[in-house]
Length: 140
Image (cartoon, rainbow, N blue to C red; front, side, top):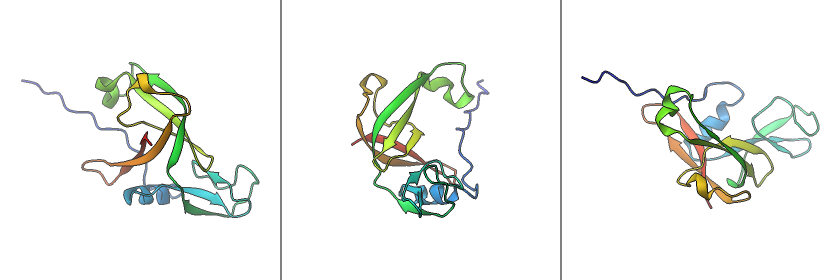
């Protein structure tokens, strides 16, 4: 008899007041970023003040979802239980067309095919049994 259970995937806090609009947009298959109303700079993750000018005036704005692969690393055990059977597990940093960088995962791209500057586009994955949609990237 096998009494093992599948470990739950670690998920973000989608109810955090500062990032909730990001996760709500993801549920609707939209990528949004904080945009400074003073200088126009986009920022991710969302922060109370602008990285460029310090203004606290911002809005949530849709972005293109276009990006390039900026960097990546590969995780090996020991890892959290959900990742155990998924190693080696790549974690990517993509640079959005609008400027910010995001830590994410790439979908359907073998690690051997990762190339700096590779064009990517956003994609979304609803999490079964959860009120959460994760943001990933795939080949453009």
